[in-house]
Image (cartoon, rainbow, N blue to C red):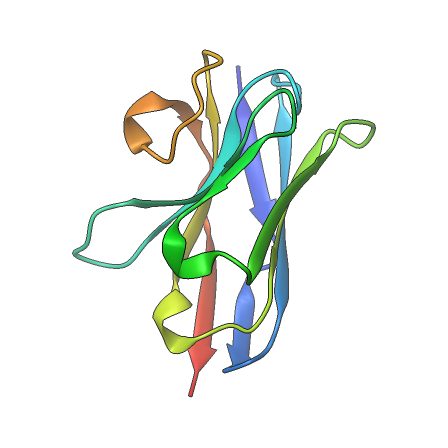
Length: 123
């Protein structure tokens, strides 16, 4: 059974930084596509960043240059470094993993979801 456990969320002011971590069990980081999605109440889930088994990454335009996704295969952990945070980044951030190698910023490819960690940015 695959479980994804996020940590690192919180509340910071505009311009601040946070680092999210995701520790999977029953799934090996680096073996397939993993990523971070976010969702605000009443809105659709949005792909933020994904990384495939070769370390290739993709980001939604709104976070390019500010967020960095990475994985530490030795620690079996996925990270999302978030810098220059803006109020519009406020959302629940969910760790995600795909069953196949296809790696897109689309919730449709995701087989496993974490419970999420809240990120709140104040102006």
